[in-house]
Image (cartoon, rainbow, N blue to C red):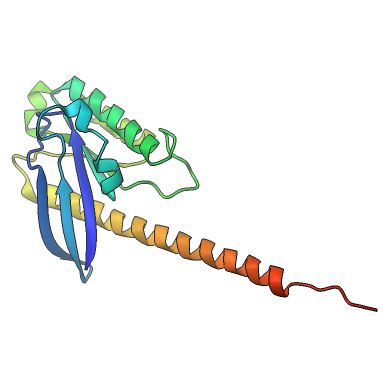
Length: 189
């Protein structure tokens, strides 16, 4: 069984609730143990943003409320903090596979009170090279389920990519070692 750990980050009131959620599920024939950690559902959101979740999680859902400009600005800061904590520049690096992140504009059902336009969310996601989606968690369970499934697949691809890179760099080091030991030798005359 594979463990998939996701962190749900964003401002208080952006539409997140549970502190730790666990579920077993099957995707592409693989049995997975999913854990979703929401460290900011309690109080003190500025302290909880990255201390534990960045080290713990394999993927991230960064949520903002489309009717709250401050939560969008907070989401922007969280995206930068995730990238920096993972050793990437805020805008990402082209030679690495992107960290699995989904930027989510929640409360689409409150579009009459919208303070953040969809284009702004899309532009922010593009800048940070992550997936973007606007949803209404209160009204569309299936959309949320599909969003999680898509992120889980991205995490699985990312974990495979990291394992392949480690395997490749290990074999490359072994090739250098063999070459040093058994490489070209001078011919004696």
